[in-house]
Length: 339
Image 1 (spheres, rainbow, N blue to C red):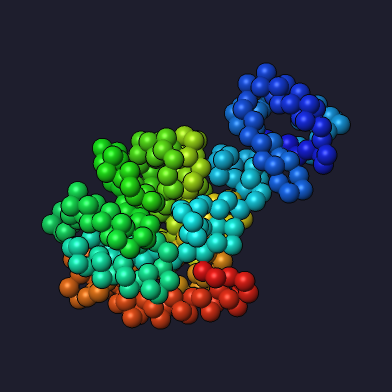
Image 2 (cartoon, one colour; image 1 turned 90 degrees about the vertical axis):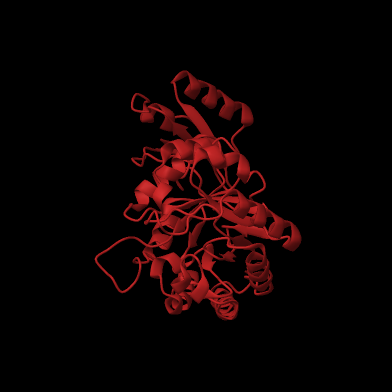
């Protein structure tokens, strides 16, 4: 249930309403916008009399909502959330960033080379996998703790914030110096992991599962937010369909739909979606034109020799071209855009 208050309501009147709502066995989440204050009720509201509330002098309107996600719901939070990573790096509310780097951390020299290149091209966040979920048990699984050490060292030397994927709760202590924790598509519904991530104060990038609906993605975000961590970034990375020309099918409509349903930022990953390097640029441009709050692009200094996902990785030169083109699209759509 959502209660919209009239403008210029006295604080004591609002507190009286909140006190009464608590006696009804529900918790109230207050969102104070520029023009209106909204109270979102979380819990069993079936027994609450809407007519009684709507008849109060301070109430503008009352509305029941059917969506089971509350904290991620735009109806509860009309303004876009801006997830700030550090000074000058943020997603949402007009802020746009590109996350770039290799699929897997392979060596110190490799990460240093790529980090310097993508930073020079305007990337705001460095990606790199230390723990790699792979379909085949015989494929490269990542360097694990050594990979985390390399990432942190490159972070220290370049000053770039880093993002890397977590696969198991037991690895969480290794992520203390990681700026954004990524939950991959295969773990989107690992609810025990999501609950644990809800207890920490760190941005979480949550990828959509291979065959999951947008409602299911938002429910997974709700698991994190219900635990107290509301710093969630959603990522569209393509879904599995009957099409075989690309690795997955990039659902760009998800950007528009998610922006309608939720206040959370939406990032697009054209690399995993297409699986083909030459398709990354047009899909990155399309994502920027669709209003995405950021991109996640795989970049490798030597794609043919990459230990993971070489066919979809751009060279630093190709990434520079993509970043320049994306900035032009952003400038055309948002004249004051810098990202």
